[in-house]
Amino acid sequence: MVFRWLKTFLPMGLYGRAALILIVPIVTIQLVVSVVFVQRYFTDVTQQMAGNMLPLVRQIDAAIRAAPNPEQGFDDAARIARVLEVNMTEGPADFTEDQRVFYDFSGRVVIRELGDRLAGLQAVDLSDLTTVRLSMLSPRGPYVLEFSRNRITARNPHQLLVYMLSTGLLMTAVAFIFLRNQLRPIRRLAQAAEAFGRGRTIPYRPAGAVEVRAAGAAFLDMRARIERQIEQRTLMLSGVSHDLRTPLTRLKLGLAMLDGEPGVPEMERDLDDMRRMLDGFLAFAQSDAADGVAEAVDPVALATQAVADARRGGGEVDLGPVEGGDVEALPMWRPAAVRRALDNLIGNAVTYGSRARVTVAILDRAVRYTVEDDGPGIPEDRREEALKPFTRLDPARNQDRTSGVGLGLAITADIARSHGGALRLGSSEDMGGLKAELLLAR
Image (cartoon, rainbow, N blue to C red; front, side, top):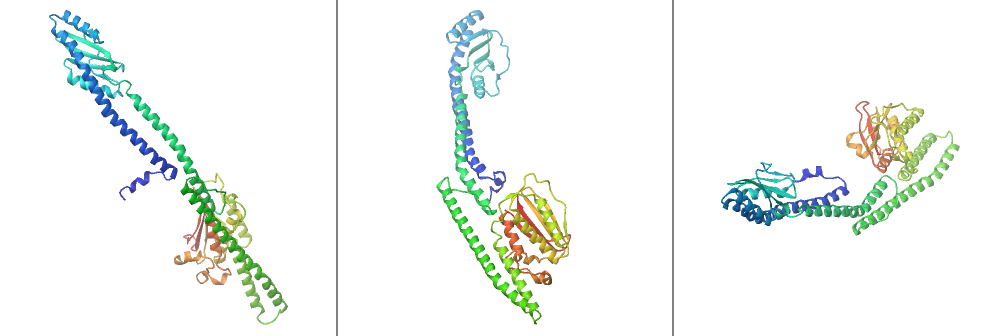
């Protein structure tokens, strides 16, 4: 689009854009009215008043020229000047050039009109905003005329501009207060939606305009429906897992009584696989449930503890240096959920590779955990598939060493999304295996 470049200069927030929409018309109207008023009204009025003053000045000059001698001419002119309420002084003026204050716009019109239409005018002094002084030259000699500025320009021309500016500022302040009250419900709705996207539920009540109330009510319905679906999924999988544990236990006891019979070890391994599958289903069902409440978490200490626990379990895991600055404000996370995500990534790394490395990067708005290994990795065309629940990529990742059900990465991705982040899979340039990046909002 032609005006696409304007987007780089526009505010990003709704409050800033609404304020801009409010301010631009007000400022434009103020400028247009000011320019038109100054150019049309003040200019025209000043020209008219200057034209009315010209005959009086010419009458004084004519009296000087008509007298038989200079003395009588200046006496007659002074008498006429007193009648016209003009102060006349015989002799040269103490100024030789036009003078005015820089912000005296009407004075510029006065100087131009008098200079073009008054013969014998040498200079105009408008340095005093209340007085006009004219340096005149006649055949009888120089003289100075002085009269009130109100006789040649409009009185207090700045008052309209002051009133207009004051009214504009007052109306802008009132509009800002009204705008803030109208945008407050939208910000509350955005905060509630952002918190729910991070796995937290904060109180929210629809308010504001009709459209905002409708959006808020729709959000509450959507949140309640999602919560019901999560609860139903959790209850269903938890119930299935719990109900299947009893027959599995009986089967295990029955096999224990058949110790030494052919095929018993294989059946016991099948039972162990079924138990691990049930544990995986239960963990997946609880991935969206509340793993405690959100609290301030030290991301570096969390990674350090996860690496230390992995080492105690026999894994060769290294903790790399922390990238970025220190964490001034600790992020609000659910520590049990984040720890589960880290354990899943580290567990996959030590399962499919012989060595793993964990690094922490403190970004401006997020924390990035990177887990790399020296295993076979995941092909690029199957990385998106690997994040789906119940997906196993064993042929590509050393099937002899795995016994999972394909839920580890799916659970980790869910935890990342519930914390306003994401899980990204790639290739490790240093170690040659999989590189998993866990991004969590701060």
